[in-house]
Image (cartoon, rainbow, N blue to C red; front, side, top):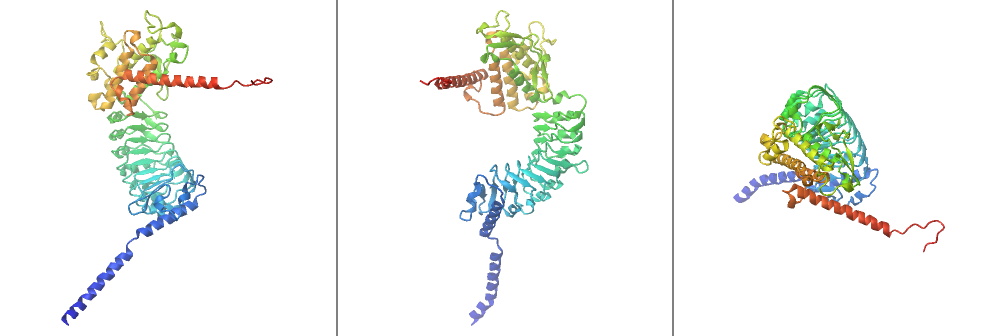
Length: 523
């Protein structure tokens, strides 16, 4: 009897616990329901399409698991996490039903023909990390609701026809790393500056806003943008004011493009603080005053040698004629508006027949292209050292070439122009090696005997090898430490390819039967 009472006493607790557990189970979300909702949302999106010309979405049906559909990926809970329909030729408005994919992390429908406005997808897509809508025909404003996508890291709305002010709500995207809005009709004003609002995006690395109608000024607050920023591109807008000296705070910048705006005032010397800067574009503005020599971008200087070499007349391999310029020097290398080098003043040039020269042409004072190769080598040394061959330090038998060759390769910091920010000035090893390789080319070109100098075609090959190494592209490890041999190897491979192509063309011509003339009888 006592045991029965005890049992009855605890039963209410057990019943309460059981009811509580059932309540929890009934209120917990069902993955099956979530997957079903994702399926229904995607089917509704498919049905909203005006055109799927290649039937890429034909496998989207209830008989196939949604996670196996074209362009769909799911997470571990079997919820749709990625929709990637890039470049499928789809035509439609963007259906707002995509906002029902509550677990969606990546949405990429770029390079299609989606048109009209962007729906308020940001209301429900709290897990969204990447949104790619570039290359469509979208119009209207950028939805302010995108500011609610707190996990968003990559936003690309470029190459559309979006208009209106860039919403200041985007400043709430503290995780944003890449923001690309270029080539639209977006606006901003001097009273509602968008750039200043982005200082809250502390993770921002890439900012492309070019080819819009942004009309704000550059304020000192630009220096408070993300310390991680590497690309700042604002070209072809209506941005005015001065370039703030605070831009020097953005020490990780690699590229700055302010071309085609209404900027005024001087170029701030604080740009020299940007040690990683590789490209600086300031053309088509109203800037005034001298260009600070300290900030002359090294890459602009170093890329000119390649452009000059390509412009040098080295047509011996392609023509029966050669041209010897005979007066290649800095004054005859002109830079156009885009800082592209052009060779000028052919007043002393000579047209030379190829048949007049053998392997040692140029010996004995005869005019030859090898003289231009020598001039190019000296020109390159001038660009790298900042000194002319007529400098007062070069007396007796000491020449510019001899001075550089004595320091090459271990002591180049003693001869290269300080403005190029040498190895001991904080430049990367890759850049330092780049300079060493350029000096090597210059010394090869300026050898005393013409027969020891490379041809201009071989110089171009060497420069292309250097560019490949500098840009991290693959080069033949066999020639990693012998630039000239690498260039010769490439030249031979290219000549062989041209020879094979020529032979195939000749053979095709010989194998093609002659056309039957009118009135004749084919044999």
